[in-house]
Length: 223
Image (cartoon, rainbow, N blue to C red):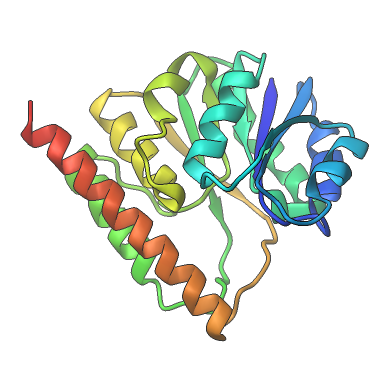
């Protein structure tokens, strides 16, 4: 099993994330994709024991996951955000159904408590995932997932736009009639709050989700 971690300017947390992922039973490698970081993310990740894929400039989360999956060697891919730190160990709960052959994709469902947003991006992603792919999820934006490496070429694509990658996975998994299950997880993310940085982050998320949904709708129309 390979853990794949897209990371940009996460030097303060990525080392702890990598070490926690490496302690999960069955994880044989952690592939960190340094997405054009301007800090010491690459150095910290490598020092913590990660295999490194380093991009000279930022390509966005979708591109980072796509390249990380291509570099990974495992039959099962565990997708993890770089800012989870020690809580990344909780992702062990996602792996069992894929390893046992009971699911193609497992989506994590974090516990209550968001980052201070109003839920608009989540609502749009959920609506789009169900409308275009028939996939109904409690946490459609959660980036913590496990999946069979064999289905990664269908689900991880540069055609997605940045933070729209989770929505792309949701829709394509539904269209391909993959077995998608959900599992509760207890993780701790970086909190953006309701300051300018937080609203900017959510605006970028919303833009990426909308662009991805438009692309997916066009694919369906074109068939």
